[in-house]
Length: 168
Image (cartoon, rainbow, N blue to C red; front, side, top):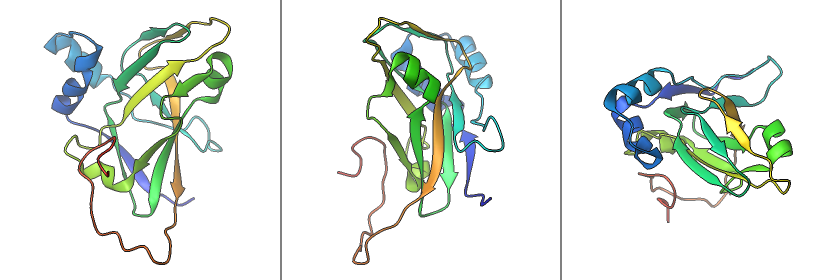
């Protein structure tokens, strides 16, 4: 198996900045949450996806959305990207969806001003009124590393410095 990437935590300061949208946490509580962040892991040797865990508990009723920082960034070799999906069971039970349908983390995002922190925006799109309750540290997403190609006449020479919308 080819090893093409590694997961790291962003700095505490970056994580704390990303948590501002989720409410007012004390410095001590933020530090406890940060210290509890779990780096993504595969569940089995045959798993393609790396499970991403919630930093805080949350409840999502049908139709509700939540955005949170993972506290994680991913270094990867050039010509690879990290594709993010809801975990299959949660998609099946709750129609849990990423708001951008599939998250694509480019290799150069690692070098962004926000340290390449991966953010997640999820919606419970259940038609049956199901309520998703996620505890702190629960696996809700999975990331899969995939190689990609470019066209023969590609001559892009610019680099990124940000997340959503930063490349135009």
